[in-house]
Image (cartoon, rainbow over all chains, first blue to last red; front, side, top):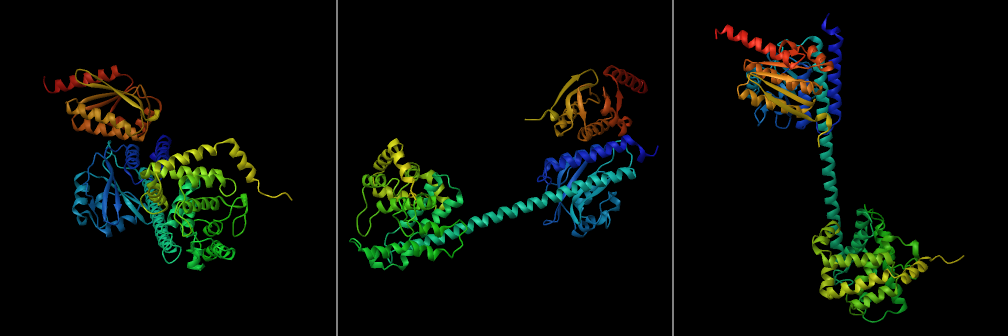
Length: 444
Length: 130
């Protein structure tokens, strides 16, 4: 019976081909790595009862063939140089051939390649080619029964090598894409870092002696707002938006007269109205910029709104205020109370806690106050841990508000006072107050 | 943790002039190379006749066959012989299709393989006039 009609043999070869394809499909990104290639090599060797073989992968940049899998053969670890012309000639074919049919002749090949082929009793060279991409070579020693491959077996071997080549080139393409994606993400992070650095520099001008003269205020508000946002479960983009809004929240003060900003006494109603214009002015200045982190301009516009609707510029109430605006308002108010102002020295920590408590549900939302307590206490307790978080949003090192608080107050007293505030936040009476106050829509 | 399909244990029984290797499990993954290493160690000790009992082997696939072919080649280089016993069903069909019977000996049982080995050794001794 002619071999090509032996149903058992046909069935075996089809099963082998199927097994190889299935095994390679299960590890799509690793096919130029060693274990899947070794398994593939063993499957081919087993299919044709060959004892020794090797898979060499083509490194186009180095013009080298590198052994990726071997059985019963060894290749130099440093790789086998191959003339690019020979690589191109090998890429043009898919059929297995005896080494003496090597394009250009074995004698013309590089010495290490010639030695491997000549001294190791290689019987067949199979190009691993997919389309016009040369992936490498499959080398096979003699069959254990000494017989040459039949035409049918040569066809099966060609198909098996084709499947391997397709999967190898596919894996390489996937890995190239992964690397490009990784690089794009890295560049994106770097771009964001540069962006934030630039805005930080701008913020230092906003707070500088030519303007508000509250050095470091914007950077501290930014860091505190981002940390509060994290503790409220906001995602990274929203926390970065908070950080950016914190840096730029007072940018609208550029249009306000410097003397007015520095006035040490009480403001007349007209003066107050003029100062309050900075929130809407900041929005106007920023709103044409397309930030990649959400609507920073809106957060800036509403950082002086209040839950009870008595804030400015739009007199928003309760749920009309975004969570970001509530957080930025909290961070801004906290830093303002904790810092010297042209019109008053900083408040004591006891007074700050009193103010927060007095305005719970009116200006400050209880869960945001809770997150503020957590952010401040965590920052003071574990500056190293907080530093990692701060680095995500701002300058390396501990969050900017921490050194300021440590220098301005007794950290133990801050802990004590915030701890008491936290306990009072869990007081049912306060919760009831918060619930009542959060229903802000007037009847009718 | 290895899946059941890749688990393989190997027992080795040393006898006067040969060894019997009894694998248990699946000879279908690179874990099967352990049998190759066992044979390498035996060949270094000078053992030339290796009998592999497949009674407790569930499945041999092309990976397993490549490992067995490598063992056959190495034993031949030492002037020895490989005996396969208790091959049945699909495994026997594959071995026959691949013409492994021309390079290794198949017997239904270990005793029949031993009888052939004893006879073969006797013939060799006579040929050498011992």
